[in-house]
Image 1 (tube, rainbow over the protein chains, first blue to last red):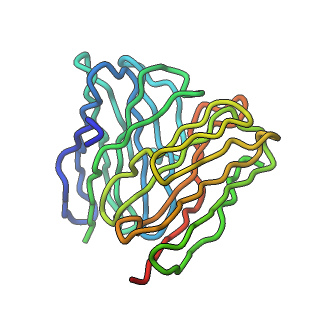
Image 2 (image 1 turned 135 degrees about the vertical axis):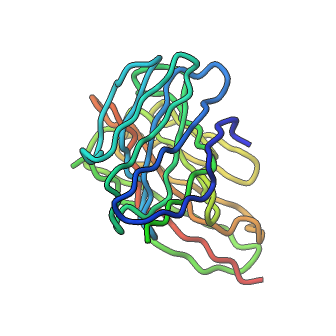
Image 3 (image 1 turned 30 degrees about the vertical axis):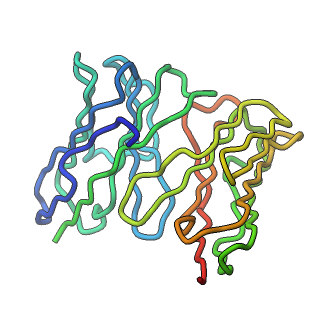
Length: 115
Length: 111
């Protein structure tokens, strides 16, 4: 158990809909990262938040957004869902901001299926 | 240049055999991380490497940060059935804000 929690574990929805994925980082970690993993693909970095502020952006679509709340939990919002958005979405957390030389611990993921 | 090339893509071995996989890049890395992912689960950190030349063990696993800072390898000795899964290397290259992942090595063990 990494200490990172994600809910829900599974999500099935229809095209055009909007969903929210939730992540709670490990106790003491200030940074939260979101990743997308499509079938048989590696992990693609989406976005990072540190202590409530956006710190780095990766390959995140404009239809997707995230935020980190004062209690440090984070939510990833996916809107106008398309079939291709079906994937595993992982949250990771770490202690420091920059990411360099910092170790990330991953949650169990949310499997999103768009029908 | 910012890509990680992980090899092999897949391995089929007998239980008890040793395993070796590696990651290379044309970029210089400051950190190398090795993760294992079981189907439908999140990646689990196995070993973290922070200095060139560093050799670190975690049980039957050993990983090294290459001297050139452009590569890393992971060895698993005396493989057992629970070693089955996908192994990912990941790292931060100089000046990067994000963790870059290799394509993964899928390990299958024949009993």
